[in-house]
Length: 126
Image (tube, rainbow, N blue to C red; front, side, top):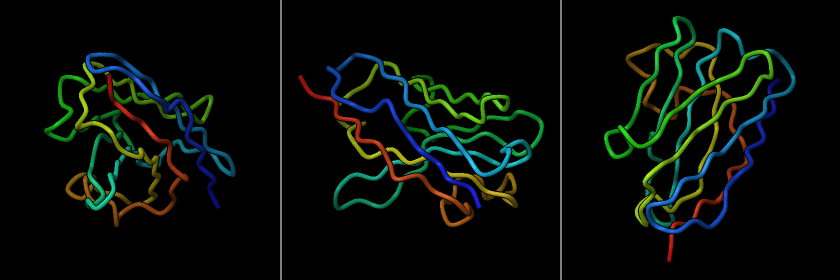
């Protein structure tokens, strides 16, 4: 069993930056795919970014490419999402996810992930 806990959300002005973190406990996440998704009220869960199980490959959703950066520290069992140039459309609850058998072709699909955090709210407003 894996427990994921996100932190670092909050209120930020348009154009600002924010870094959210996800700490995992229960087992090492080395060899697991890790991802960030977000969901705003009334909308479907949206892929944000992911880190492959092996090889250190990263993937981004089109709406965040060039602005967000995903990183992981396996020694600390922690996943990060650095968000720059934030705009109001980025307002959402951000969820961390981990998956054992996520393959590259499915890395953007939230149903492929086994464990989820409770989410952290990010609000972009002036």
